[in-house]
Image (cartoon, rainbow, N blue to C red):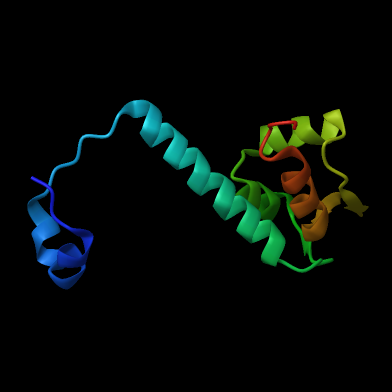
Length: 107
């Protein structure tokens, strides 16, 4: 049964019991499209920022563990600033890294 979109907009309660069949390929492509759109929007809308983040804050921002951050440091993927015994990471550098690598996809 096909219900026109206008009807669904006027009566959103009709969608409460609807079931959809979406092929896996279409769902994956949709998810990748949404992820690219969100990443592009976040990177595009943010202004350069020299805010310094701790290692913990950097891990949280990137969604990675400390060992992964250390490995990225050793590979030269990041450019930490040493302040005494601690490392700090520029927020603008992290954003540039995300933008250039598109989360690990070199294009």
